[in-house]
Length: 202
Image 1 (cartoon, rainbow, N blue to C red):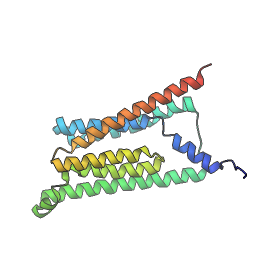
Image 2 (tube, helix red, strand yellow; image 1 turned 180 degrees about the horizontal axis):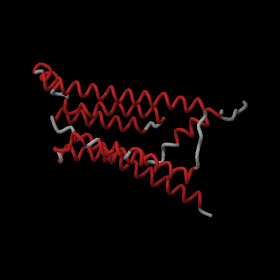
Image 3 (cartoon, rainbow, N blue to C red; image 1 turned 120 degrees about the vertical axis):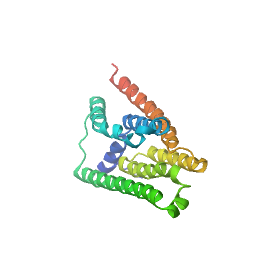
Image 4 (cartoon, rainbow, N blue to C red; image 1 turned 45 degrees about the vertical axis):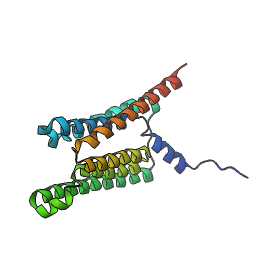
């Protein structure tokens, strides 16, 4: 039986999947969630603005990741179909994030303005933010072709459910998930840097 070599499309798909396996994005996301959780739990005066700081550092993080990864793994220029696919998915992720934000704002406004809505929604409010972020994480998992993000989404969903059942602060799912994601990202980054040293060793 003849064995056919993998197609260029399959090779590019595998390369694209590996392009986000250095752990830098995971560390950034984990630390961001950790910061949001800390702010929500122990810095209530700035909890509403806690997401601003990670957003400000997205561009520097991506630039730093590009510099670190490309200096070790090289630069890959994706084909036109892949770039078009990535562009469409980025737009979809942006639209999905905006939709999740709109839903969250609508729920919080509804709870504040309607006692009948409050009775029906207050039981899930502590876990709502975690569940919305879990949905966004699933979308990013498809965008990055990174299955580990589905695990992160599961942690968010489960910790959100536990938080809602315990009627605890919404900051706890952020804190727990942030620790797990950041720790896993550090392990991935360490492996990436160690692999680079092994490959570059004489």
